[in-house]
Image (cartoon, rainbow, N blue to C red; front, side):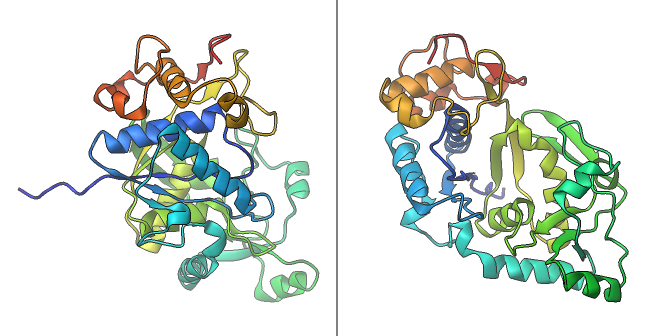
Length: 317
């Protein structure tokens, strides 16, 4: 009987500020999911926008994860066999993937501004994002060259008018028609920075990631990434999308709003107290008692994790 491939999970934080409780919860679930199966964790720093993600934040992030006991097996400043682990250092790798998509005739330059798209009568998704109407898809080479004299284009990938479906390990079946529900999406910005969808697909594949645990707000991006995996001839991982933590009133947590950053939490709680409270709200223990990550491994099961987003109990943190 063939031996099952080892599980490789990952942390993939964007160091644009100190982690908040939602980031911590997702990191904890990713760690527990992989480690409960005897797997490993890769730490990748998603600092594509280097101006918003200075290296000192990435260094603080590593210290915070280590303080919580959420250790990793490769990546970050410690490096490993699948580097670079900082996306800001990966442009040549993304260039190669971009060239492969271009060789298939899947890419085209787009000169539309975000403001123009939002002002147009283009349809919007339920999350407010514009479904790209294909404005620049059929520009002739001469028309594109003329426009490029005045503005550096973003680059979009052509998507088919068909369903892309998958089974999420936690939320079950999910499907989208890329043309109708998303539209041709950006793989490189006008300033040359590669977009999240392309970078994360390429990096998870080259790092051997077999399991992606992330917030439910990224569920709708998965069909786009599956399309890129197929177009690039890469093997897709399994996906587990977890419920988001919400503020006690039901508002989304965000770094911008200063929601319970780890900097503030460390002044009030021990690492075990923070982990224990998170384990409690995610149904992994019956009370918010202090807990080390290792002590939760025998209790972890995706069946225990709620499907709906979770509003933090008033006064828990």
